[in-house]
Image (cartoon, rainbow, N blue to C red; front, top):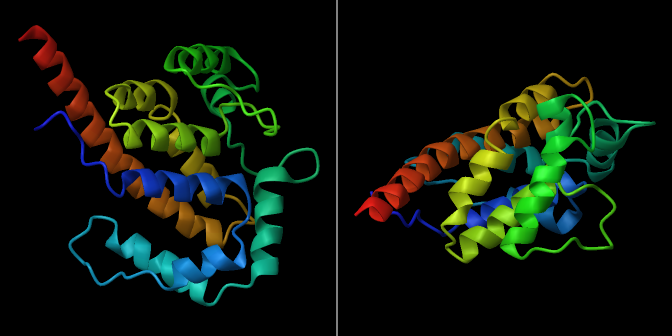
Length: 199
């Protein structure tokens, strides 16, 4: 396999997930999702794209905003914890966040002071992946494996088991399908890069 994993539309998909996990979708995004062309049945994610599009067509924005609030914010905390540290170490602001900050600094990324959440929020990690994909950076596989691969399935399971989840169950299913494809593709990319270094 060529070490360059196909770039498009991977960055756009990462940014879509970043948006959906950062905040409840607005009317414009829901309309875009409702109008998705899902005729391509050859895609491994086609069923998930179709399901998300169907959900968006009949969605009530106010209900989805309430769902997002209950899932990810709540009173004190929501049903779902979208932070790597919590899933990897059992608490917020732990060693995984420190390691992430070190890696972000080495990649030249700086924290946006307007963002209140720690950098290990899944939305922020998806944004970083989108930028690495757009740059076709070889570090995308390393970053994915270090900061996403070990806990995204726990996040999906938490969303799917949450009592408030309806629309986000479909989001989680698509997210899981995409991440599984990424896990395979980026592991192959990592092997290819290592092989080229040996050559």
